[in-house]
Structures are given as C-alpha cells and as structure tokens.
Length: 97
Image 1 (cartoon, one colour):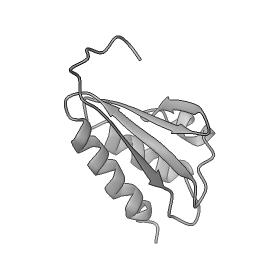
Image 2: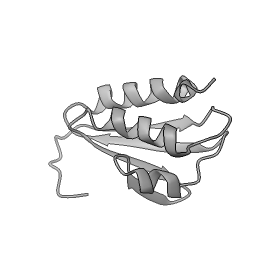
Image 3: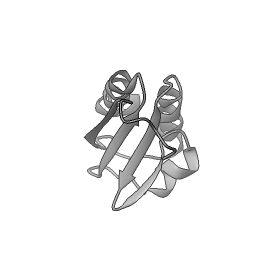
Image 4: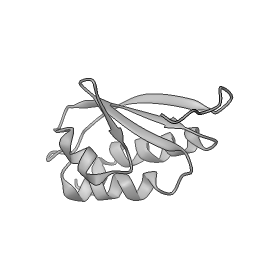
C-alpha cells in the first residue's frame, strides 16, 4: 500500500462466495465494475494472497469457488460505502441464481 495517512478510513470484511460457479469472468467483471465506482483502494485476500479488487486477472487468480471466504478491505474516504456495495453484490450471488 502506498503511504496512506493514518486518518484514512480502512475497513475489512470477510465475504463468502455463494454463487454456484464461484468467481469466474462474469462475476469478476461485475466486482470490478462496482469496486471502480469508489475512490478507495480495494484489496481482496485469500490464503495469504492479496490482490487489487480492481484487477480482473488478480480476482481470477485467487480461485474463489463456491464456499470460499475472502477478506475484502477498502482504504479511503468511501471505504464503508465500497464494502457495502461489494458485499451486496456477493450476497446477491452476482445475479446468477
């Protein structure tokens, strides 16, 4: 992370992949579309691997299958709103079911 000031809001939430086919290209594109609406830096972590939540290749390399748990972090002024929007998308199963 690039030297973010200590007063920059940082939040993290664990989210479980619920859709049957996991994080394939379509859900990854939807995730990025939502994440990119926010100024905050979005990070996604699974099994000690952390990637940018605004990188489709990064998301696909995490191998997020149904039942996988990822930690999504947001760093910036709209961190809470970013996590709310991403969590809603994940809980909607990326509109696949």
